[in-house]
Image (cartoon, rainbow, N blue to C red):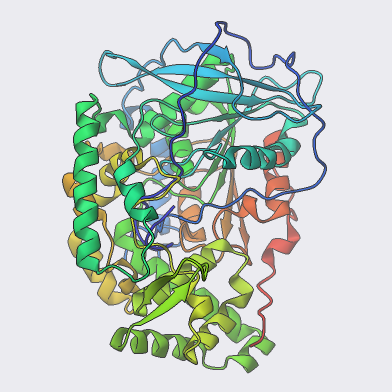
Length: 565
């Protein structure tokens, strides 16, 4: 999700592919299982993670954990006043599902229903046009599926659950396996949000993609890169406006309304939400705006509306490294192998700031190199943390780099360019500028960078301010920054090493979600359902039963087993 690192603003995601073409008319009910397709693979495959994850942090300079008890009396007030706080949500459009061919292969023995749903371009005034969103229903294997499907909300903003180009087939193979536990009793609904993937309108910025994809044997200076990106963003913003698009067409509340339009078009009066990363913010907005229509919600890597990511990035980075240092110190073998792990890292950062190095990476036949300074080293380690799989190797990675062997560390350095082949740039800019960058207090950003030094270095090269200065984003409504209160049964999932959406954020959201359950996976990073079998099993069970046994996922509490040098 991030071009800078797991600790910078999100400016990249999965990109547009050719627009979906409708070929027939109709409005089938969601539980229709008359379509055909294949036998499900019994092997488990975790969904591929996006290499660009948004860096998010807590909502105050202190460790935010759960808000103090003084906030708890607000729960009742928020539950009662929610409709007033959010205003009266606009009546959902008279949505209609138009069937069409699927744009992916359906395995033998499985079944899918594909088509489009048109949504209004504006929700705050009469619509001038509609945007068609591609929808795929992965049909249940049950003879009589439950009437409330699982509606998936992808992360981002700007990501497509289907992927793009040649990756679509591979991504969908994963989806058939991933969705199998849910489809034993329910259909699973996937869709591209407005402005993303096959959905209308096209918000891609190909100018940025060209910049990011251009091979360079030597790193470009920060000033030169900023100048090139600024020019590309300006061109894209002018095309965005020339195509009749406005920032007010893109927001988290609008995304929530679109999602419920899709449910209505498919004949579902109620849904079960399954959301990841930024998608959890959309899910929370759906709870705020359309709560009675949500039966259960599963939120993986929770991003509440009452936190500002840009302000809290330094704290978030510091928190992630403190987790690593404490876990290593508590582990006998790690403590013996790396008795001064924190000092090793701080010395490494200081040394690289005094004398940055260029390190060759990638294919030897296509020479490329990255500039490794203190901030880049921290960003690389945060990127590794976000992956989850690399957590046991982090102490060894730090120790190796401290001896001047930078190759493995450099391989984790996130790209410094905004462009990415999997990004709906205009959609991402519209939402991130509106909901994160423009509302952020510059004084808080600077204060937190100093307070949590040296971890504030990860925002030194953040592109948010310069991008948003050129992008036509709409202002955010004040109510959107309030916590969401809802009595809907909600499962919250977090990774202890997540440098993108920390467990403290889920704790914060839980204060006003009285029927919530929070499971923290001690060895996981961002998006635990993509890495932990028990997480996806727990999600399916929770949606079925609306609750979980106290001892669900006992292995979640096990800390990492660190590797030696």
